[in-house]
Image (cartoon, rainbow, N blue to C red):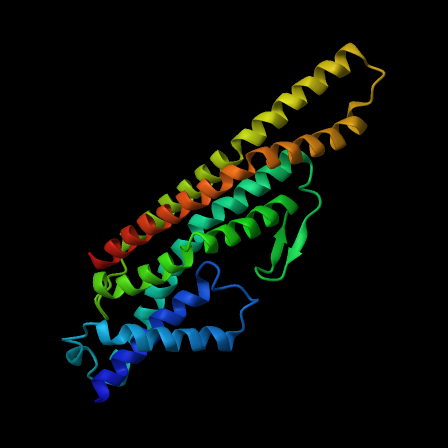
Length: 256
């Protein structure tokens, strides 16, 4: 192995570890940093023999060019990982919308994995989504997409232009829209319960709907969630397909 092979392997390792640092599931703080680095090294050894880095000799004339290539590969890996994580965030958004209508939004908890406050249903749906994501081999799809990125985006060939920002904005919009669609059935039930409580307060003013409404909405929300929970597997399966499409689109945008 000459120096070009070594530097090319380092660039592959940089893209893979950058992806693992921000990607869905792999970025969790529950996984030690040494385990992520070890996984990155193992993936590099498996993927590097299939990577085409012809023409890279002219791009690594000095240390400054290599540093620019390393920075570019870091950004490429982080953009790919962030795109995958962004799509799956729709489940968290759906859980927070559900908590807002069930009255659980005031019971926020600190999530050490993200360093921010999350709601109860948001955390529950996200954890359940991660388990289902692993059950349907979604992590294999992520790793295959990362491996394919070296075919669509050869080392040093990525173009970080304005189109990437436009695509990420579109992904943000689709993520919030998808989260609202996931939470729509339960939100509809909560709105109907609010209307019923308002009618009760008009017809029977002696009833304190504020005291009765909270346990009623919480219990009704849990019942509806149990009813629609079997459909959650189909939702996660659809998210896996959405992640694959978005990753392919963002990689093609960086390749143009």
